[in-house]
Length: 318
Image (tube, rainbow, N blue to C red; front, side, top):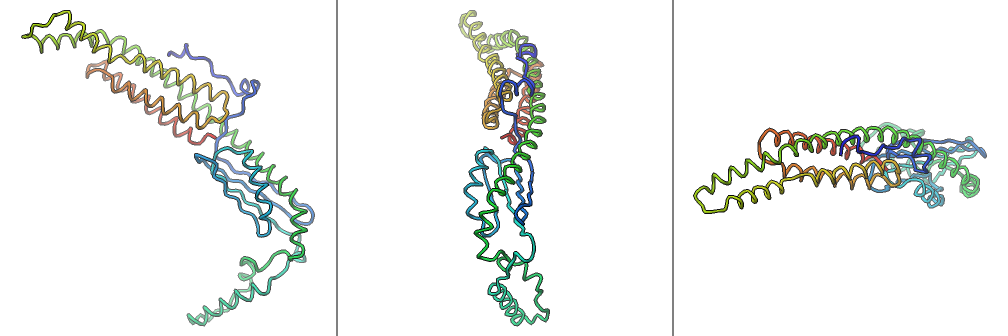
């Protein structure tokens, strides 16, 4: 397929008008924060590439009942990627806090036991003890009340953070789309050059093969016409036009998936496996060590290289 044969790739604006979803990268970071009802709530979302949706959700102690709803919202918005989602809660001031004296006493007792066992003279640091899990928190009586007030704020923060993450991932996806299209164009150019060389090489290859067969079978009583037929058949088997046609078809399908962008990552990865297979077959069928064969091999290796570079980029597409 030559460049002129390839259908024009739709622009991002044309894809949007056609109702296509934007291409999304799986890499991004976003956070959202709100201060309401005497407390502040912050949700941060960090995303990197992954074959499936790998969700890690961290919430403060006492907010575990909100996890199922948060997970449901995230799964509706994100299809693939390793996601770290962290919820942070801070009450309005010290009056809203309570010290769990039993937990604090247990920490102090453990520290003093270690000091005695190892002969450590330093006194325990009270500020450090206050930072240990379970020492300071909401009064038990007010935890349910705070949870009820904060649920709506948590969902708002989560939704806002996911909106920001989407915008960042779409921006990265637009850049990826342009790079992928550029590499597809390069593959199309290389395949067109291979086609020209293959057409030029096939008659010469058949002639050389026929001459070689005649030399090897000079003392046999084979029909010269049969030798010519066998040489032509062998040359036909080395023909790579089917591989080039399938490669061109995969390129067009790749461009089509990029335009529609629905669950693009897995589809593109599959197409790249097929493109790599065609490139390998093309190389295995390249005839001889003559100049045309060497040139076709060089171009075929470049095609494989471009396909590998495409696969590296596609691993980051949702």
